[in-house]
Amino acid sequence: MSNTNRSGRGKNRRNSAAPQGKASASRQPSQSTQSTRPSTSQSGKEVRSRGASLSGVRSKGRTRESAPIEGLPVSKNEETVIEIVGMNHDGEGVGRADGYTLFVQGALPGETVRVRVIKTKKQYGYAKLLEIVKASPDRVSAPCPIYDQCGGCQIQHMSYVGQLAWKRQLVIDNLQRIGKLNVLVEDAETLASNTQDDKEGAEQRVQDDASVGDANQTTGPATSEVQMIGSNRIRLRLEGVMNEEDTEQGIRVLPTMGMDEPWRYRNKAQVPIGVTEGGLVGGFYAKGSHRIIDMESCLIQHEHNDEVVAKVKEIGSHFGISAYNEETGRGLLRHVVVKKAFRTGEMMLVLVTNGRDIPYKDEWIGSIREAIPHVASICQNVNKKQTNVIFGDETRVLWGRDVIYDYIGDVQFAISARSFYQVNPVQTEVLYGKTVEYAGLSGKETVIDAYCGIGTISLFLAQHADQVYGVEIVPEAIEDARSNALLNEMRNVKFEVGASEDVIPRWKEQGIEADVIVVDPPRKGCDPRLLDTILEMKPERVVYVSCNPSTLARDLRVLEDGGYRTVEVTPVDMFPHTVHVESVAMLKWKGQD
Image (cartoon, rainbow, N blue to C red):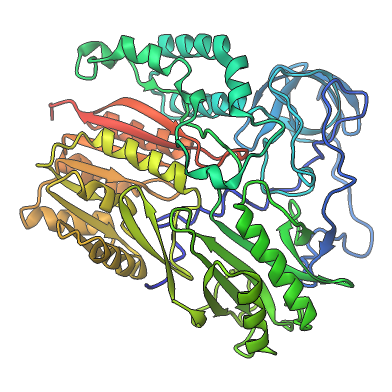
């Protein structure tokens, strides 16, 4: 299968569960706070990559301080006590000091905190959390020992029930603020009440605070009990109302669909490699830098991924394999990429190197196979470019197959070294199931998948539709989509390369009329011409799968102004303990031009 750096749905977003977070204040409050955080004395080593960025190093000579802004209620380095009234999309607490907005990393809504102002602008500023005077009921101790250093997770210090509620509210806020859309207030109030009533018992069952669970249990039920709080009750009230006039009063935003076990959910690790006196190190970049945080375990990665990375570092150090130096362009090993198929158990190891020649290649491969018997494929990707892009253009198999196989639902996928595959397969099935539900298929419909990527959603839809057409602008992704269709012997799906806004009108000229159009665009949202194309074709339903609530809200506004009605939106938690949230929206044509 060919490679693609798209997210399989036209998105380069699936590293987002472990982003290089921006530089920010530490989330570690003082020891006198009411809420305790785990000590970082046992945290992983912080090692500057030999190719570390020097952008954060102050240049020689004197630097000019910006003049203080007059008339603000607070000044830089001033300490003050504020109430946290909300949390922004980066997971920072939002507080007010005499009406002036301060963003505080690590603070949660409902808390009273003592902070030090570290930066001021005309309309807002940033402050460092010093002490939690009054803690939120949602505050928990983050179990990860390097949480305060690593940028991979942003809200481990928030209970999982709290995370799900916040993500739902984030979607609602964007629909109202950016889309100027009407959300059913009664639903929000009912769900909030029910959530609060059952919150304590649900938190115990989710076990998201003290225990990270067993990675082998990830094949259990995909839908969290938390998402069902209030949902069943409100469904009783809303049952059968999908086509009634009262739904035009506003959009129903259902509870966030979470996980029963919100840990160890990632099936892919991409680990940058550095060097220290003790040998090779690898982990995550520290927030806002190229300093590598060496770690032995990541609590959102499958345990087998951790084991493979640790063995590769150990074996590489034994054979004297050098780490790549970004500044000089020398050194061999750049990244270690591990892929785990949850359903089949197969694993793939990809060594990203700065050149084709690997010293002691046969001995190294033999040692890896002996130490990690469940690895079914060992590949090498060659990237000689001085860039922070992980993969190069050349990939070759060192041992085993060129692909591993896994399933999402009943659909099988072949996963190559560079082809996309969703990093949370458990929640992917939930996301796609909701997409199929919102499409309302009876088996007679024609469906267009406008950002089909490698065909993941297309193949799900093809199980329930008469014909599915997928379009994607990346040729390699379409090659993968066609291969996966053949793998599953699905002949009622057709894929074409091109921009949706160009291909779909051509299909219409050929007599292809869509009953349903599904879109799953990148974070920037749908191309305006695609939205115009949808409004021209007027399919009965549009299903919008989104990874960015703000662009979702913007595009829904355009579709609503063009004659559609947004009936329901369901947030899906694809990346627990991060600020990212997926959403699925169902729109219906109002039946008027």
